[in-house]
Length: 374
View 1 (spheres, helix red, strand yellow):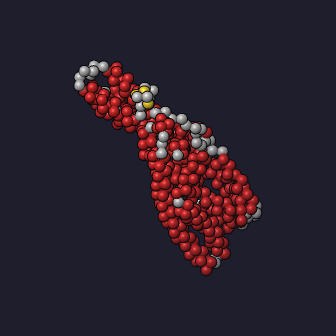
View 2: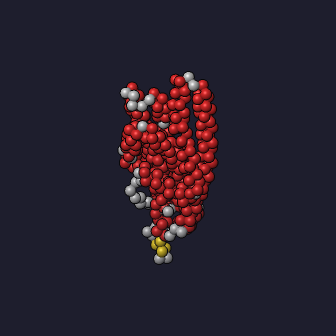
View 3: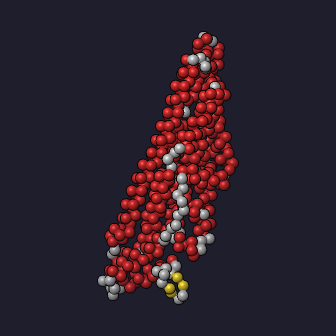
């Protein structure tokens, strides 16, 4: 229909809907009810027109998706983001404090110093209270940040939708824009949750732990600062980013087909072609989306497992090195106990860091679609 001219101009969405009304009247009148081939051709052309064609750029990788999500958060509410970072830093400091208190409590137990033990126990319990306060501040800042970020992106998408020209309508038809507003922004919320709770908060805790290890034992800290960044720089993201982009496109196509079916519903119902529409138009994109969704989840799990296993190996290696240093009296026994307590507490943050990569893989396609539209 977009290539047929009416009065010297191309058909637009209004012309298509007017055609649907006229076609419904003609077909229900009984004069052309036998022309199913003509009906199928009309349906095919209208679904093609309403579905539109999209041209995507190079697929977003994990770090590009992370930068995109962070950019939206900074522009929406910089103060809440700074508050979350500050609360995360305070929460990260709890681990080294507890490690130091564990070493002090061990020394008090070895010396039989009851007064020092009582003081260490009280301070150790107080550190958990401080951690709970920091966690509450993180929840408060995160809640405001997510709400403001969602409103910010919704306003941007709505403003861009109102400013769309004729060429934009060909690239982003109504079904595609609806899918973006309803689905992609929701996936951005998952990306923001991953950025805050699965990346920023555990990364603060790990960074503070490494700095503490450097201050107590420089050789251990230097080794940690050298090895730990390599874990995240060697993440296999090329394949995961491509399957994430493919799933995002397939999901958008499914929603666009459904939206197009809604626009054509009166004609489909009048012609009694419901089953034909389901088999011809909806079933293929749904099956394609299912396959790409499964591949995206598999590769997200692969990336998550890669990070988790390497971080766990990182902790085990450092515990072994620290044990040998304690045997050779390079560090004291109390320092060894404190270090083991500190590195053992990094197990939960490592799982969270691995989970972020899985979320980033699943959200990369949606972040790319929103950025391209804006």
